[in-house]
Every structure is written in structure tokens, then in C-alpha cells.
Length: 233
Image (cartoon, rainbow, N blue to C red; front, side, top):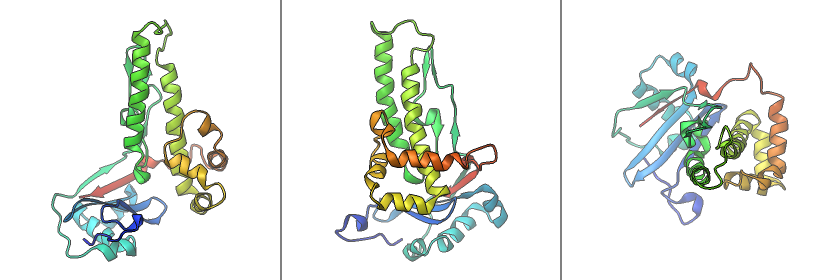
């Protein structure tokens, strides 16, 4: 596979790249070494089944058809490992912190990974969890029924902000592009930089606009991100 090259930050060889086709159809390339790259494709599970191909055949087909910029980078590529797949990978639970237990990161929520927020959320929530545990075991522990209620509130706030970013990207791609390049692009920078907790997030004008747009589409009939399937090597 051909890696980008150049001094510009957008062209350095080690960049992780995302290739978009249409709603819920995208691919990634993640350089692992100079001659080894992780390639993955994400699409609705129904679409994968319609192809009637095994995992290896399907991945090869998508690598050559999903996006011309991805196809351009594919050379005489051979798979270093068996092609793997996973379905229904997005999930969420509301009962993840209480008396005697606390969940962090992917253990309570995992959202469509197109923007790779997962590691940040896990590390940040670990910080919040550590502080909450120290407080609970110390003099400030109190006798609340849920000693980790504050932790749950702040982490729910952050996860919700990220979910709004991802859903707006899929549901309103043109609006998302205008937000990212318009006069309020600093708002989008704040969201991608992880400024998704507390007052700075609540004052984020673009995030408020996202919630207004998404409120029109969210409901029982809305397609879940868990309907997606990924294949990769």
C-alpha cells in the first residue's frame, strides 16, 4: 500500500486516514509500520450480507470500490493476518455507576468510531473515576445511595456531546461541513479537542445547534449505529 509522503502535516506517512463513501459507509487506514497498514471497512450489516461474499472477498472488493482515494493507495497488497469482522459494536448502558461499582470508557458505552474518540474518553473517564473513588473512600465519601452520581453525570455529558458530533456528521453532512469551516469552526475544534465537559461545552453554540437538528430525527424509528458491521485486517 502506498503511504502519503510530504512535509505538510496532512501528508506525513504515519497519518491515520478515513475514507468516506456515503452515510454509514466508510473505511480507515492506520499505518503500523513502513510495510504494514491496518485497513478496515464499516457498512450496514444488511449491505454486507447482500454482497454474498466471504470476509476476505468483501474487504478486497470494498478496498477497490469504496473511495477512489483509498483505491489509489492500494498496490499489490497481501493480507498479513486473517480478515476479521464484528457486528453491532455500538452499545450504551445507563446503569454504570453505583454503590460498589463504576464503569469506565468502553465498559459502558461505545459509539461509531469514525473519529476515534474512544481512547480519549477512556483516559478522561479514568481520571474522573480515580477522583471519585478517592473522594468516596476519604472523608468526603458521604452516605449517598449512589456515591458516584457526580461521575455518572459528567461522563454522560461528555459521551452525549461526542454522540451529537458523530450523528450530525452522518445525518447532516453538509451542515457539519459548514460548521467545521465557517465562523464557528472554533466550536468544532473544541469538540474534537475533547473540551466536552462543563461550562465550555454547555456554551458551545455549534453543539447546541447540533442538538436542535438531531431532535427532529431522533426517535423510535431512528436507525441505530449498532446496525453497522466492520471488516478489517
